[in-house]
Length: 495
Image (cartoon, rainbow, N blue to C red; front, side, top):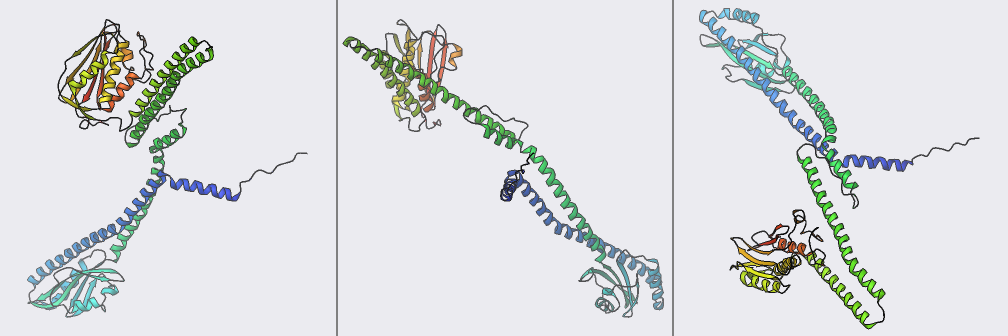
């Protein structure tokens, strides 16, 4: 008999919490915030545009109505003046003229032509008149009392039917007023049509905003894909995986962001690789003397001479480790802002001091060339150490009969020291890496037991001064190392 297990169910509290997290993530994302801001901005613009659109539309309607009224009045006036000129003394025929005019004239929509004779309402077209301008209205009372024409077009607001716009003309016979012609317009119909247009505009605007929001929501996913890819790539990066890069597609700020991220990751990977290589090389350089010390101490017997020989070897290896550690400390200090102790240095005096110190390193043909006068601002100990390192490097790559030359040249902004030797030289492939830490030339005669930090220290000192280092070398002909320092590092932007 099979037993059926109930399917696991999600607790209501956990489901509610998960739903809240999804909503929080949705509304907390940059994409949603940008699109909501976009939608609210568009709706705000529409909300401000509606009353402006309504005012402009009403103003346009009123202007058109006023033009119609002027046209109606001018047509009546010209017709009346022609009739009056032909019938100067026919007061009784006035009503006949009015009847004929109203019979032939067709007013525009919502326009009313009203005739008042002898202070009483006579006729109007079309009929019946609306209550606001009817026989018993306040406006009709004003018109029946008119004795002088109203020159301007008058607009009267009525809460029930909107504005009433009118213009009048006094009917005169023998310069005596006999009646009033009024052409009036009720704006209720026109404004209703205008409001209908406003409502259509609002509905269309809302639909357009919603459609634009949906399209922007879809398009933003593609636009923000580099940012999403950036987040995914950043999560996948760790000390064991630094090779991830973003795909750069197109131009603009996001493409520039992707390029900047890739450039940053190149620097980070280079720094990690350099650190890893540094640790490996440093451990290797320390492991060798430690192995030598341990091996000799383990094999050391009780013979005093053997013990003395072992002690000499051990002390030599300890000295070598001490020099190596000091070099590492010097390279570490080169990254600090207080690495240099600057002072004003006399160029010929400093050059002679360095030359005399270098000349005792080994038996070589030492020469001092182009001893120029002048001063520059630098660190005496660091500059001396850099040039002594170059001199020691030249000694290690030359034979006893070789020439090593120390020289100096002063220009408008820089002072350049050089160390030239006639040794074995450095291949072009090695010249690109010779200043790296722990770097050694691949195929060169070398009697150095150093760790390959000498030239790295030289470069660190020159960089700290804001200077540059140049190397010219040919295999079998020798090498020339040139160190150029600014006369005043503060003006050259020393780091």
